[in-house]
Length: 271
Image 1: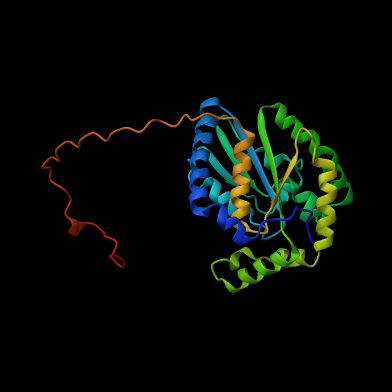
Image 2: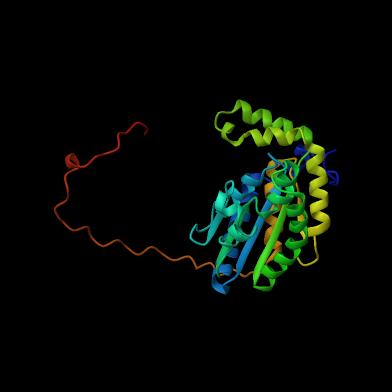
């Protein structure tokens, strides 16, 4: 197998234990409570999502942010560094996106690009790679000492399941944009990426800043497990505002309104 996980329950077994949509709704409610707590207490929360291509990082990020206030929760997915950024201190462009008080920031891939794709595909030198492994635990400890709550997730998937998802993306025009030449190149370097991941863990899976591995063979199960685990890492209380009654609407005044004929109405193609 391409990952060292315990035996997982089958889809039939998991369906007997819960309803996915119902459980996701419950987790969404807890995420909203957590966000209110983060806002009220001025916490700074940073979550990194790393792992194999097609492992489902984007899917869980989408489900986390779905119920949350976008003013307090944002996703960072940086593109290839510019020529100027390549001359900067390696962590510099990531520092600009760190959370302020009351914010939750999710990194869809992060500075760990250097230990993964950059190292395996030869986009950085061996010296840059070794310096990254040495510097990262110190950098992350600095972030944590500054008050940032740092959480790191690695999504693990087997080569067979990855192939299945690649083929699905190739056939589905709504998902085809997710495929890149780099994805296909990574498929041919499975063992190289496995070694890179193991070496990365040896250096950066520390007591201060541990990695949490998500078994992502079943995408829906992985989403629920990841969100539920995340909720266990931060103690929070329910600060949601209480339910209120909607007061009666005052009578609508007889004021002159702009005629519909003078407005550019969207046609009723549906409904």
